[in-house]
Image 1: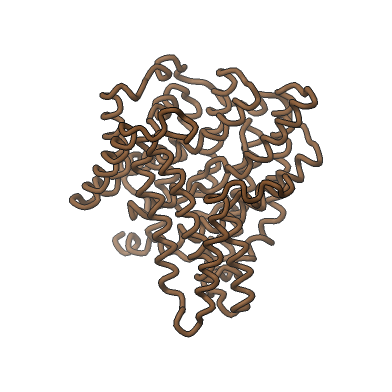
Image 2: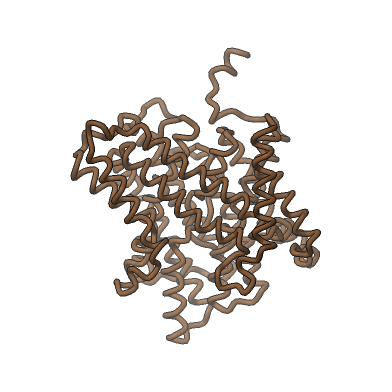
Length: 456
């Protein structure tokens, strides 16, 4: 028995149920704000009623749980089987907003516009299943100088979210940057730092969760956290397929969402490489292809259950780095919690009550950990005998930060290119891959990304 336990990979280790539940809840809290953001944006843009927006959020949580199960637990030939959490991709927001604007201009009923969106999402998922093997084999173009650069840009880009959270949400809010918000965010951060420095075991592994709860207690005492929506929400509500009507398929919408799926897959490869580095389990070509199929199947489920395309959530990648917990079954437990939240609006409202500024204190740690992982990978790159690697890193980081530091840089470019040009991660991927090919050819491709026949 002991010999068998010794042979189990940390990624496949099944932790005690209580610890799984606590660590899983921590993952859910970390991703919740981002997970429900897209349904809120789309629902409000369409002018849906609060009840309809609530349906979108419940469906999103339910489908996110299913998509996470597919990635973390796996199906035959599908799923990366690493500690990965799935949430709605922000890359889909631009095209969907364009579809909503076009529908409004043509006086199309809002539910018909929503059906067009779901048709495009389902079609993009089918497209993703078809092209996943092709995209996955591009992993040979991702040596450490490329993956490290991309992961660094992911972390830096995410800091924008964390800093905005710490200031209260979004810059257009009148109380954005309130000293109270920043103070509570710093308190949350301080609790996390104390726990990671002076505790061990479960306390250290759940520092993000404990810090978030401590921040929520302070926010409640200050009158900045309300439980009104928790009391009003129903205890149970089923999530049914096609609650807003059957999907409608339109060529332009489908093609646009298929482009989004390519963006999602390229970004997901960066997430897969980041997680594989953190858990010290190489991301082989076969595993990457399985993960991309997981993204595609998640999109299909999203369209069926009245929600949107899914991708690996980078804030949870940072949490893996902070806790050091490698078990993918933590994310399986988190997936179960997400499904329960989707089926219980009251529970989801309780998690949603956590203020953005509390999450901001935790976000600074998690997102910084993603950037630090990129730095760690880049520290192993040869700059002494190959000075060209410096150019690859420098230029790719600069290109990747364009959407962050200059949001209007591409404002006169064709709208169809918006999913590409507004994604700093994708821009850094393209720049790093092309520059690496220009300077190094394929000689820097890592053996760790070749197909591994031993993988299940």
